[in-house]
Amino acid sequence: MAELRLFGSGGSIVADLTEEQTKAADLGVGKLFLAPVGKIEQSKMSGHACNGCKKEFDGPPKVSPESDGGEPEQVSENLLLVERGQYLCGGCDAIIGEYRVFEKRDGDAGLAVPSA
Image (cartoon, rainbow, N blue to C red; front, side, top):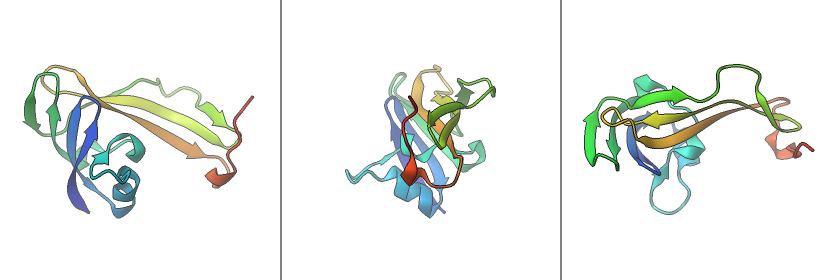
């Protein structure tokens, strides 16, 4: 694991990432991004910065799930959206970034077919 800075639309988060998460976050533009990583465990986050209040904080941001844990949303024939949420600034509650957690039904996202 490596401690890296990931950027969202409203700031950044410093977190320990696995090699797989690091590859997902790297979109080839010289920065790592939050959105492709999915939800990061709070214990893996060590700091965050907010573009809203222009401050840096030790410790993780607040995590605010948008979904209530009810039925997953079907995204395609074999892909479900099980959780969506936001990372919020610990100082001003501004949105630092968002996350989505997906579940593959049959284990092969390459066969994802949009639902009608």
